[in-house]
Image 1: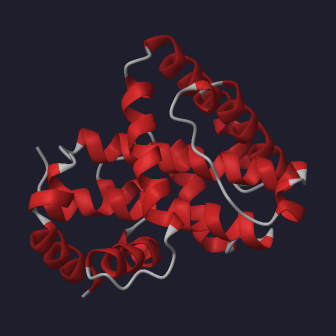
Image 2 (image 1 turned 120 degrees about the vertical axis):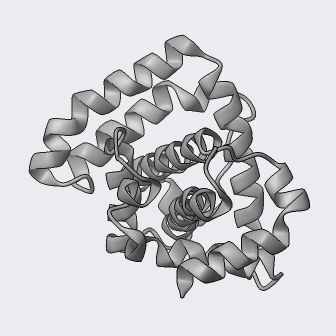
Length: 202
């Protein structure tokens, strides 16, 4: 089992992806580099370390800051923790569904060449990842309900981007569980989590 300093990286990846979900839903625009980190992580299934999943520790700084704000009660987005809880619950159901897990992995592998050639944030890749989420994870309960500006959430391109970012969030949730993460981290290890986050932030 990995220690907390590794697990907080997966949680930072989760928070970071969901931060982009919230931003896209509200404004129709992602932070391009932060979204790149999230979507790249979807394709790094066999990365050697948690940090490598995200292309290095520096790429996780926005997510680590979001986590720090949450644990010290400084968060300014009340929807983000609820969204994170919904994704963590969704991950539990996802990993128990072998057929769906296999379908998602096949879909990711099927897009890996295009992502490598065009970039994981290319509209074609985002559209494919969004469709993959819609065909698989969106059918599980509880559904992850994303609130935002109806003007943007009515646009197919924005919806695809939101779904692709949700897929990235689930990828981080899976990694967190693989590293030994559980709800006890939130209930019993808050101080240790804050220490681990602050150490990573330097």
